[in-house]
Image 1 (tube, helix red, strand yellow):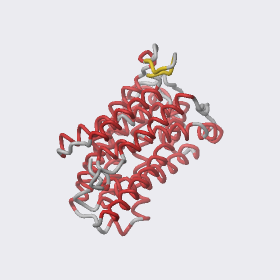
Image 2 (spheres, rainbow, N blue to C red; image 1 turned 45 degrees about the vertical axis):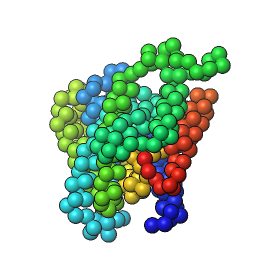
Image 3 (cartoon, rainbow, N blue to C red; image 1 turned 90 degrees about the vertical axis):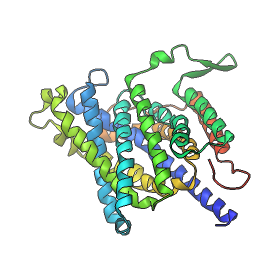
Image 4 (cartoon, rainbow, N blue to C red; image 1 turned 30 degrees about the horizontal axis):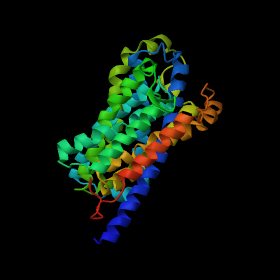
Length: 353
């Protein structure tokens, strides 16, 4: 391939991954609304819900979401299914195992922290991905990409409130750590698995037809999430206390406001976004991909400024729009600059690390 063709292919991949971030960003307020619906249905809130309930709810939502995404992929991309061989099947299982653990942890965390904060913490994959890529692929990132990762961390710290602009400079917020919640810890654990997923997609995608391992990734995610739900569901005190008549998971799921959100999540942030990710991420380095994915929290915050109000009307839950703040503008600008740094082409015009 010529240098110009490589550059066009790289630019196309970058544009596709930006679209992925836009779609993923929309999922945060949708998942937050689903958590609020589950809380309302079982009569709990973020302070009274047990850990078992949070884990089961997130597994149930994740399982339904990706089971539906798998079915839609089978219908819309039947030609891809005919290309699937054992290596693609096994690659999808490996990626799906990493992803489902990350998703259950992230969705559980979203029940106690704002959608924008969850998105910002998730972007810390920019730290772990280069480390994992170096360990498993022996790819040493370019210094400028590492610099971009450090710059993006500053942006994330501002957006999460750990750093504040005061007296003409950035300072650690006096109550920054005091605002830390269980959801923050769960989301940080999720980041480790998402980073592993990024490296796995890169490794398999450079050796296999990357779109062909998407269906088994969806299927693995759905099966493992629903299996985990089945194992933990009998031990949930909230369900035991309210499971009579119209209560229970089935009654929650058949509500139009609940399954409507699941359908939206299955189409755009799942079927479309992950198909684009698996197809185009192997065209950039894993470290560049992780920096690109720091745009996800910016997109999550943007969506969270107007989608929650619409969802509160549709779902009849109390969910207010988040506000545009100076921290959002400053942190978002820094993240965009970090992406521009990371995506500067190397002198040989190839998309290396």
